Every structure is written in structure tokens, then in C-alpha cells.
Image (cartoon, rainbow, N blue to C red; front, side, top):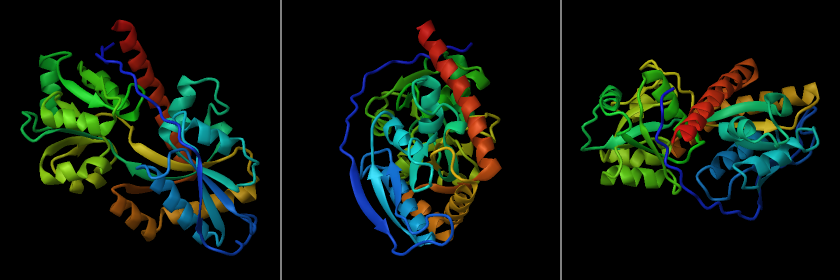
Length: 334
């Protein structure tokens, strides 16, 4: 087993007060859903943050497509679990929907067996709407010009190449421990409690060798040439905005860990209600309007539903279990 040198650090989690705000159109939708009723869309993050707009805009477009009204309810805390618990324990009528990342519905149940949702059978996946790839970046003056350069140096100097992440059990750390395992290298993984911005600043100042933030949040540094992108999660669609970078998959590494966002509902929805919600949500997620909004916000629209979404959840769950095992093994070895 490849050993990761993971420095543990303590972060402070702030609990914000829930905020309810109105959005969307008037009128009553046709059919079984929403049946003229108001939709509540739960966002498990604080209002005004980098993720809040994803849920807020998607719920607006969904309500418009359904000829309904909607409110957004912000319920942050517990790494999404507070908001998701409300969604999953709601009456199964499709009137309470919620935003989740893979961290919320996939990673959290793996590490917390007390949650009321443990598998995809415990909630209803509606649609995956967004992918925000993680990107491995170095400073402009770094000797690493390509991913192969960094891997080669890590093989020459085990445990010496320092790469910053946003925490131990985060999708960007999962990218690195999976890369270690598959490439046969040993990185010095450095979690930053201050988030991706802190890791990027440490990279720019030379305190660490690289960082792996989400691509959307660091485009300005990449576009200005201050950061060089080496590789990214997701597919080749991001190549054009990350010059010189390649998908990890094209380099031969299976690291399916981006910041992906999906809409979920309570389990046990009536078939006709579930089918209508999935149809409307898929229509929005695949629309030009949604794609344009995502591009402007620095995301990639990634519409996925039905069997394809079920397969993605299953694959990401298995990959996450393995990544968590790698992280836990590294703790025991340190």
C-alpha cells in the first residue's frame, strides 16, 4: 500500500441560519407534479457562497419549466447532511427537492453510519446537472511542465512532493490518493483548513509544490499565467479552458472525483411523480439556457439521469470507498 503523508489540521465550521428566499414563476403545473403546489428546493450551503447559486439557479429554471413557484431554503452544516436529511425525510410527494454533491450523498454515508441515508435506495436521484472538475496546478515557475513530470519527480523523491488539498476526506484528496495508488507514487498531501484559496496561495508562494482546487475557482490565475494546469478530472471538454492540461483519464488514471452536483428527493416517490420530475429536471439540465449559465459561472453542464446516473453513483461510490480506505491506511501508518 502506498503511504500518504497527510498532515491533519483542524478547521472551524460555522453554522449559518437557514435562509428562505422566493424564486420562479407563477401558475400551476400540469399532471401529477407539482399539481399547482409550491416546490421547496433545499440548498445545504450558506446563502451567497460559491455553491449556493447552482441550486438557486437550477430551482428557478426547474420551476419555470414546471409552470410552478419555488422557494430556496438554505440549510448548511454537517457537510451537507443537515439539508439532505430534511429532503430525504420529507413527504414523498416531490414537492421537497434538494441539491447534493457527491460528498453529501456518497461520501458522508460511507464515513457516518448514523445518517438516515446510506445507499441510493434511501433517496431518489433525480438528475445530475453540473460538473466542476478538480485541476492539478503548479506555479508558473515550477519545473513541472506536465503531469508526467510531477509523477516522475514523486518517484525519484518519495514523500517529498507537496500537494495541497481542502481536507482529508474531500474529493480533491481522493484524486491524489487514487493517483498515488495507480501511479505507484508517494506524495506529501497537505490539507488546508482555509480551503482551496489557501492551498493555491501556498502554491504561488512556493510553500508547496502543487494544489488541486476546482477549476472554476482558479480560472483567473490560470488565464493570467500565474498557475499552470497539468491535469484535470472530468472529460476533455475542459481542455480548451485549461491549456496544456489533460484529463487524468486520458493519462490512464481512473479518478472520478470532481465537484459534481445533483438534485435528489425523498425515497418512495409515486412512479408518475418521479417520472415527471426526472423529465422536467432533465429537460432543464440539458437546455441551452442551463449550459450558458454554467459556462458563465465556470462550471460544465453535465446532464445525467436514469440508468446512466445510477451507474455513475455506483461507480463513484466504489471509487470513494477505495479512496477512503487509502486515506485511513495512511493515518495508521503515520
